[in-house]
Length: 209
Image (cartoon, rainbow, N blue to C red):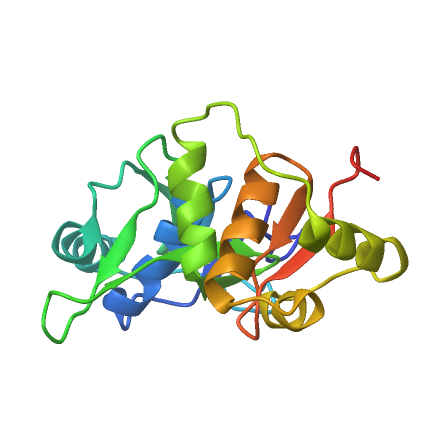
């Protein structure tokens, strides 16, 4: 797994120096497709291992208990790589209670949700959080196929992606209506969403094409 490099389901950390920052990776896995966090592995895939893995496990588990909400199910395995070095593997399955979020270490109140996009864990937008939440309670999605939807689909016939702001300008509608339209079309499986820190990208779903 390490030889395959970091991916949407694999993350490497050299050690648990800042556990409150590392837990965002676990939350992102739980909110997406699940994944594995390897502690004792460098970004380039080399494996120096940990001399005292129990210290890293303790720090990480305390951070999970203190800052992850709702409760995050996970498993921990300690893997020997030499006589005195180990790697800690933390496995997180895709959660049935998502979205999970991280409490701010500063005040314990601010909630930040993360998702996995490619080999990065990024902060989820309001639209991504709504889509995650509503997909937990699936039901038939109905929408009116009006002028703004026609403009959107025509645009995506010749352009691979569109952002919320670009759609708002294209359809000449409010930010709220543009957001609601994109969320509903994504829930209806007309669109796919690719989370991005610079602005989520919406594409025409393969079957819709």
